[in-house]
Length: 278
Ligand SMILES: [Zn+2]
Picture (cartoon, rainbow, N blue to C red):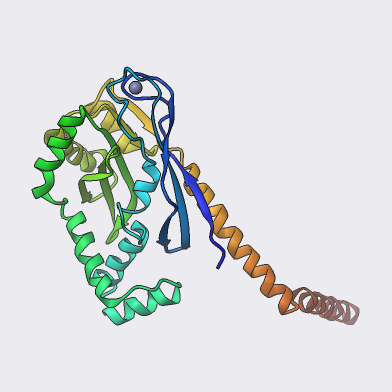
C-alpha cells in the first residue's frame, strides 16, 4: 500500500509567552496512526519561540490536533479506541466479535491488545491517573507554565469525552465523559483541572460553544487559540484520494462505465416502448 504522509504543526503562530514568531525546532519521524478510516503517516513539525531572550525558548510546540487524534506513543487513534469500548460495553460484543469487526475494517489488532486498549480507555474515562498529578505538576512548575489543550470531539459510550492536555508535553491532565455538551456539565471538569494544575498560559481548543463559554468565564484574559483542523482536513483528502483511486481502478477493471451505459440505453428503450404504448 502506498504510504500517505500528512504534515502537522501547532495551531499557535506566535509564542504565548512573548508573542514572538514560532520557528522550526525539529521534525519528528513520520509516525503511523491507525484510524477507523485507514492508516496514515504523520510528520509532525515541532516549533519553538524565535526570541532567544524568552523564557519559553526551550519549549516545544507540538500539534494539538495530532495530540487529540492519538494518545502519545500509541498507534491506534482515539476513534479506534473509543469504538472498541463502544463495541464491548454498549453492544456487548465478545472479544472475538470485536476482532472480526476491526479486521473487516483492515485493522489488525491482537486479542491481548484489545484488553490493553479497554483498560487504557477506562482509565481515561474514569478521570485519568490521579497518581501522576504530582509528577506532572512539578514538571509544569519547573518549566514555568503550561498550555491547556481541550478536546471534546470524541464520544465514549455515547457521552462526550473531554480530554485535557498539557500541549507542551502531551501529558493528559484530566479526562472524563460528561453527561452532555452543556456548559453546566463541562464547567466542573475545567474547575478540577485549574484546581490541580493552576491557570494555563493559553488554551487551545476547537470552537465548541460550551468550551468557549467556560474559558471566557473561568479564565478571563487568557488567550484562547482555535485549532485550525488543517491537518485533519488533509487527512480526509489523502484517505479519500486513496479510496477514490482504488474505486476508479476497480471500476475500470470491471468495465463499470460500459455496463452503466448499456443499462441506461436499455432503460431508455423501455421508456420509449412504454410511452409509444400509451
Ligand atoms: Zn517567546
